[in-house]
Length: 186
Image (cartoon, rainbow, N blue to C red; front, side, top):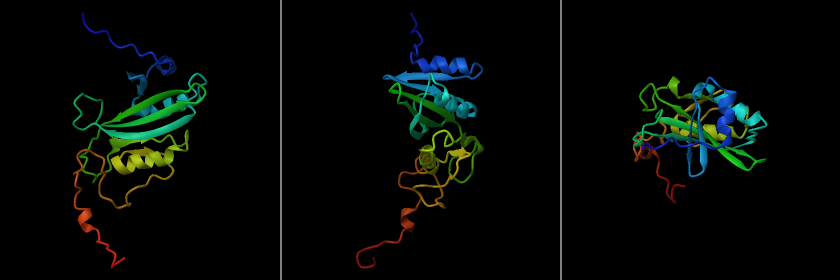
């Protein structure tokens, strides 16, 4: 007998699916944590719905992270993902939203890839500003309509995105360019 498809029992799956009947959502649950996978073009309006609809009321954006799935053993919908960790204080409920992005250009950091853009949620949760900047700085995913999208951890002219899995572990010679500072010269 073939395994039955898992039942996704978080109530938000049904609420979002009913509110956006034409959108091709996917969902997963792992160890009690539910994740809604949203097409990138629909992300902003789904996030606004999750914040504003009283059945959802996800009033707090806890985290925004980027993931590079290069070399991941299972097939994914794209190489990169942006994951949003939402929290509803009224229900003490956590819900994850993920959007996949697949690069259309080589990922060596030299080109601005139009496929690695997603809408910013800073207008919905102002606290997303620095989290989105970190995802941009480390993975090169850009956020449309972000009020101040610039590097936050590395200097502005840094030539690559170091959390991409194809970035060399030892870097590309950046360390060799630093001036050594010792006690005598400081």
